[in-house]
Length: 582
Image 1 (cartoon, rainbow, N blue to C red):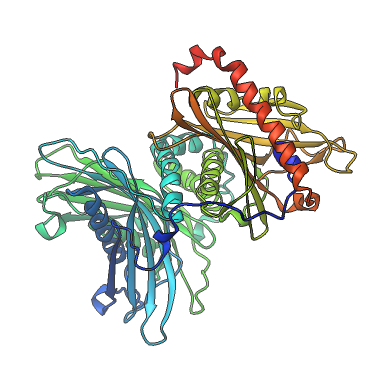
Image 2: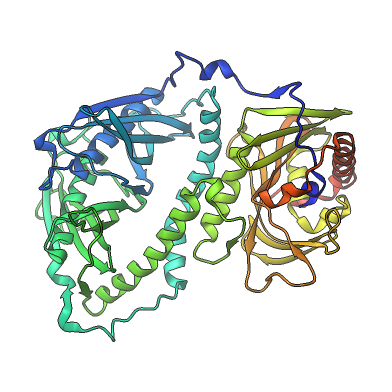
């Protein structure tokens, strides 16, 4: 769409490349924050099936990630949160667990640490992925405030993870409120009234309560309980609750994102409570709550953490078995039952949108209140990952307007770049409102604001002229997501992708176009000087319009981008009140 409507060069000239430091990816380079742990799984680490206990794995994951965070911070660190974890494989006794952790990005006093877990069979020499995790750690000093140093980025992977980490942090900060809003507004059809109560297990039968005394081996050198130890205790009571429903040995498949609300120390008593909230056909959700108190006489308990864990029961062929229905108690039990159904839908949406590889995403994803936060995240992170690629090839340069191309798999992408004498925030605001795009881009015939989702996200209906010999004009339904910089190394971002709305379905008047990833980035280069970059990942359906008219292509791009520059220069003085809010 827009600039993509005239993109017609597939024969890129490899005269120059837009790369980072390729030497970093050669032999011998290792991220300075990277920590590796390898553990041989012994019988004492396993459950009744001879498989590694997930609680033990969580302790190893937390330890490895904490050591990575402390290597970067140079001081003690504590676990603040853990993102969703999906366990792909179990690990048997005698196999080796290989855990690798490194700091993706440092903020003021917190860090995102990426963790990869793989298992290895020493007899067959086979290896496979077990899970990936993202944890947030906070650096802590007793006598002074911590200000973390920035990560030095050398490889494409490091640049990508660093860039997307800011978007993941944004999602974490609003996660609790987002879930509350979605649960309040999510309409779930349940059939509690129609079920045969004689075949249902009362939820109260699955309730578990256990207490743990925090001892020195459970804590770090500052006396704070290891986050991994708390997670292991939580997994233990959750497994007992799940077993009481199915009368079998359940397998933990997923842990939903959770935050540690406060610390606990040596000498604390931790009360762990678990109950099955809901049982679906092949899976069940178990809710776990952790509270702390210091002395038996204390009446007020501190809420340390809550989490939701998903279990299945596997048969001899590793296929999930059908589970009994759960009968919730009236009141809070029914609330937890319905919220578990809502969380299941939200979890599936989040896993699909956030975890999906770019090539696996449909071009247009249905827009829904339950997935808007994750679609916005995917929109911005997809653009940031495209920006971070280091194998862009310079195809042409006309009067300091550069055109780069990138061809891989079934995608053909391009990147336009120029310097403009306006402030980065001004350029960001002027190009954020797509309704003004027709003022400078002839490939936008009309733009209608369909829905202002929130301050940073909006949905537009766009009409563009016909492509090639097609008699019909194109139309697009676009989600535009904008982001301000997280720090001075980040650009301003405007990301765009196609979505599907029931109010704007495809009609016979237009040929429906789609874009999977496009948008602008604005870097501050100096006083009233901004590097403006436009990116677009051309979709497979567009490639039939590709030609080899390199000269015409470069000229068309140059004309459009120069019109954008003139638009920014002509309107840069109209934004004084708006700039004060950025």
